[in-house]
Image (cartoon, rainbow, N blue to C red; front, side, top):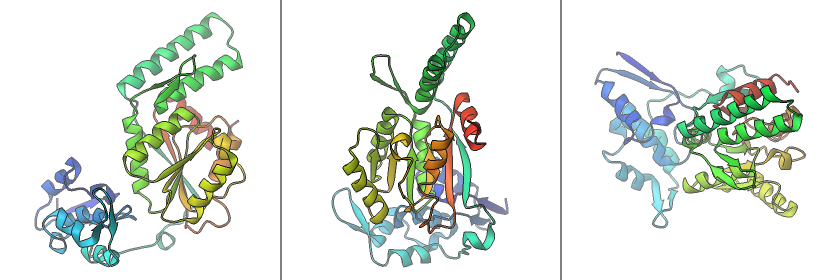
Length: 318
């Protein structure tokens, strides 16, 4: 190929991944490479290394550790902080470059909605299909009440997201690694804060556990969090730029009366049951005080029931 164009180039920040090595393998000395991203170093200055190593390897040291030491201070065994001049070093490493702002090249509505499809794992698909068959058998044999139908849908949604409640109220966790991986990709695509909405406490716990393992600063609000504590969490998220990168929330506890314009991205880890709640959740970020050009709303969906419900929500169908 004489020209290779890479969209969402921030996905090539790590030189040890198969993705990075595959791209490098098709590049030749005379290959033109255009890498496109709005966030070339969203999480840390070290993120720029993989991109620079592909576009212009002479701009960075031969080894990653030398680049890390160049742009970062080591605070503790596992904690690093950017050096004062790191931003300029990243800029120099990623030359030649051209930058356009959104308002220069896009004519988009204030809120942009996109869908990220993620497959169910074999474990999720097995139990999802078993439950669906059971519901169909019940429907064929007797009248299904609205309560029974809602219970079945709830269970399907819980399995899709990775954690379901038993009849005894215990939580059964399912392998939801692909969905959590997609969430991480979304976080890497913005340098701003992110709001994640999930219907169930069990799912919120799963998300929070994953983010903590990935060293992503996060907090959560659900029905079990006291009102006074909620106010503190919201204040930290909204007013302290270097704290709480992700706020994971239960819609029923946070859909109204809260301003969270520190975030420019709203993620629905799965669909909601209420159109009114869905609209109000988006309004947490899309309101007066939002200084981003656009607010991005992301639906994460994998199962048939999720696709149907997100389609209904997006079209404002009750």
